[in-house]
Figure 1 (cartoon, rainbow, N blue to C red):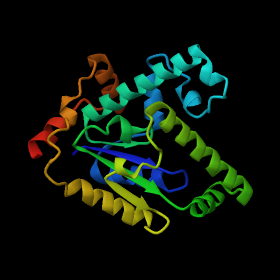
Figure 2 (spheres, rainbow, N blue to C red):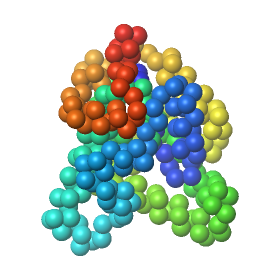
Figure 3 (cartoon, helix red, strand yellow):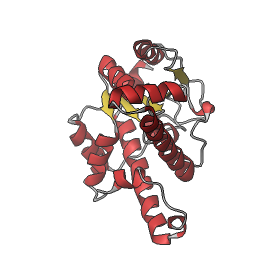
Figure 4 (cartoon, helix red, strand yellow):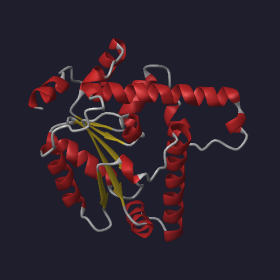
Length: 229
């Protein structure tokens, strides 16, 4: 299993945990900045703005706007699949758990924490008031929930979508990293024989080369993974 998706609530320490996990495993770390880099090469320079903005009531009925967002989401799916096909990657956010949910050899991790804990962390990290931190957390939760539920039709907190769920309000980030590493290194044989593996992903050669270029890596990690299985 050379692909890990990490979904996190805002303020759950998910970014730091994902980066540490990738570093410890020697995997590539892929986040929104990497995704934006690839998408920009396909002319989608507004993706982050679209992702982080909630459509108004009337925009939901704007056929051109809906089509534009659908095209962006479809391209996002292709990029995520290309990243998975490359192998040895920790993918942070961007609905990776849903895009790669049908593949048996991907580990899906969810990091969460109680609302009050997350607000407290944001207060400390951003040096802002409680009211400001509360508003920031609520807005981020709203954006992420809207994107996942609108475009992938799955509940943001769907527990069945994940193999490992960690409450970082009780579990220290260092221990969370250890748990993810143990889950990755001690994986069970694949019993879900009705599901495909990442080796089966068909990726456009140009997109695959673009992903490798941005990763600065042209090694085919997935073959090494298959040999270990």
